[in-house]
Amino acid sequence: MQALWLENQNLEFRGDVPIPIPKEDEALIRVRLAGLCSTDLELLRGYYPFSGIPGHEFVGEVVGCPNDSSWVGKRVVGEINIACGVCETCKSGLTRHCERRKTLGIHDWNGVFAEYLVLPLRNLRTVPDQIPDNLAVFTEPLAAAYEILEQNPVYPSDQVLIIGAGRLGQLVAQVLLETGCKLEVVARHPKQRELLTNRNIQTITEQDLGNKKYDVVIDASGSPDGFLWAMKSVRPRGKIILKSTYKGDLQVNFSEIVVNEVSLMGSRCGPFEPALRMLKENRVDPRPLIEAIYPLELGPIAFEHAAKPGVLKVLIQPGSFTIPYGSVGGQ
Ligand SMILES: [Zn+2]
Ligand SMILES: [Zn+2]
Image 1: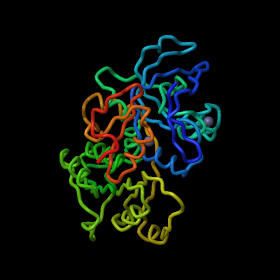
Image 2: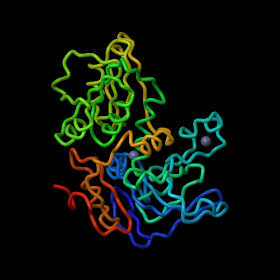
Image 3: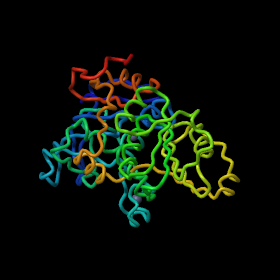
């Protein structure tokens, strides 16, 4: 099959990768559409050791299932953490935190930038017919945005600040808007501001961050500066929620956290069900984020495009030879 192959910080298109073979309780899935996210770019930069097929955001169709043929033909999305099911963490219900987990396209499991992938059946969620592929492909990052609400109640009376209006920040903003909170988003690029303004979400710049204090600050900036801004902007007894991973270690003034009694919370993957429900009910619409769709053959160019500053969502479609949005390589 065709696939993108990552090895030693080099990404290439290959036409001769063996089609994976599903084991019992797994499904073979044909990829219909896949999404590129910052984690994929970080894998290419060598932030995490991984070789194989990258990619973890997808919508696909089950084409093979050894012991349950009722799955065949279903359109699905998939949870990215492949849990062992038997460790203490799994038994306590926290399968996304399994101690021995593998992660689709990130750790020890081949990903979705290919014609086919394999996932355990328990990871799959059927996509309702009302959700087209170009919306369903956002289920995983949208679920990650919902994780914030799964972890913390956000009240309509809360002043909430999101730092960063990139791929994830945009989705977090759409999700948080639903709570009725007083929301402001720090956005650097005109396109990011325009998309937020179109949804009646208030945008500000870093320069506007004066002495105003917020109840909840969410850092989706992907940069250590974002955390420093969050520290300056959170009120005493407020919460900082970290949605970004940073390369290397971060200098943190813990005394400030203690003195101001700030709660600090990390937040990663989230539940698929609310994401699918909100997509089905048209309560969020990430489609304006799509900047380009590339065929697998142009995968390396798709990665270059996605890495440009301010670029939002780049998609990869196996078997496609048209690029409906944008232009090759971006402007
Ligand atoms: Zn991702
Ligand atoms: Zn486990």
